[in-house]
Image 1: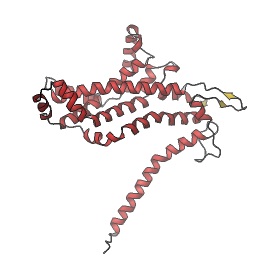
Image 2: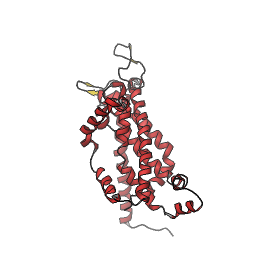
Image 3: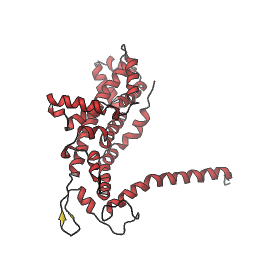
Image 4: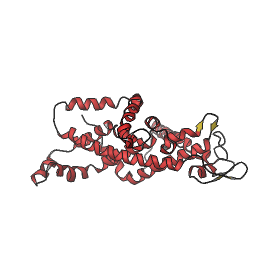
Length: 296
């Protein structure tokens, strides 16, 4: 015997599906517009969603290949977009690795070691998350300007300074990992010590393998944050060859020179490293996000 659903339930089901369709359209439509702009001849932001003609000139530009000019003669790109992309990937990989190392050890200490001032330190880390990095731009510039006089490798206009600046933003990751460590019973480490393991061996060989999903999530968040970050990078970097893709993209929309097609192709290109890392790490994503709830 078929079950007849009440009209109110069917209505709620239809409305729920309609809402999901609208939500998907709101997410996908801007992405389709960017693809359309990157394939149109000329550098125009407005136009039909389906280009009347397909042109790869903007993609040739961002890939560093000669593209045909108005007179048909090949033109060499005047902006090193692929170098900017490599700079972004390099800085993101290094800063995410350093962030992961620092936050992993710091969060373990805060979760397992009881010491004076521990609660105040945790409160301070929480407060640090409430203030955007843009408030510290002047201080960041002044610090690395002074450091650069003694250690040029981590001064202004170096990727070393950017890696250090990004690695300092570990407060959120420390709280995330601490929340995971708090869910693990201390008896696990005690059992390892009974079997003869030293404290660092219990941490390295027992806890860390169990924490791989949440560690992958922390690495991904740090990597994505470094790739898309603009304010700090725009302050520390000024030489064109040293720019990240996020900072270099501002050169596409200078006054009286709006290169929307090139900008759109570069924007799509910037999503390549993030998508690649996500596809490689997605098997750990759900487990890691579920395990990363911040506990008290």
